[in-house]
Length: 241
Image (cartoon, rainbow, N blue to C red; front, side, top):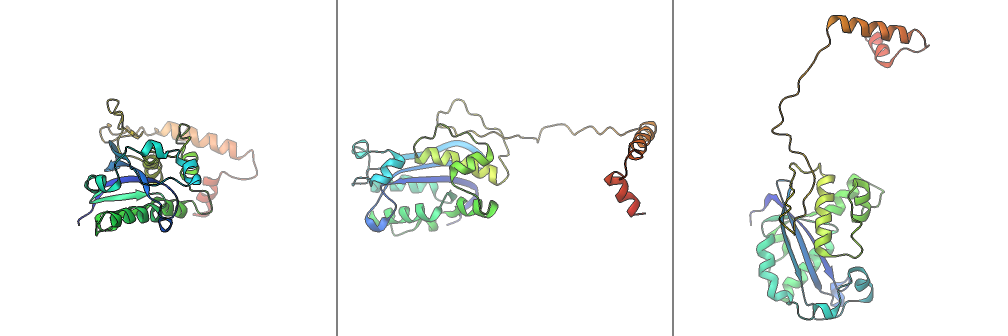
């Protein structure tokens, strides 16, 4: 399948526990679309009935109860919708092996003889952060602090919320957005702040006249004579002559 590198999908899952080997399942998927480095406001979010309880440690993290999930669809009922949303895109996932392993496990359980890596390019934003900031904490909370992203509303983990935060973090880590996208009419918008400079007029260059240059030189000479060391640029100039 041809992958569209211009279309990124920031993706996160919440699960009943940390190990598929122990029968844990996905209970929420959240995704945020980024095209040409612009957060578009298109999102995908689905709660899923995992047909089992969450482990206590997992429940403490995400707070999504078995009772809340009782009337939600099982994964096999949403799998095609999910595939249609992400296929061909580059999936950006924080600690990708974890989520990829769970998604492929769910595919296998519902009879899909494919893997997510065959549908999408996978980028691990945690690996990227570790290479960019070696030796530092690189979870989403730490990256938000590093890049000045406000996430005070994040008391519990949620797949869509984490995907929205990841979109902002990843764009900041890789150079920022290219456009300002403030879609006030879309409640699901994860609008980010950036600048589009393409329509600005060229900068006006004002050069100093001869009289101003001479006055500047006289001032620098006067100031440098008061100290033992010349200004750096004067020293470099002397060393090149």
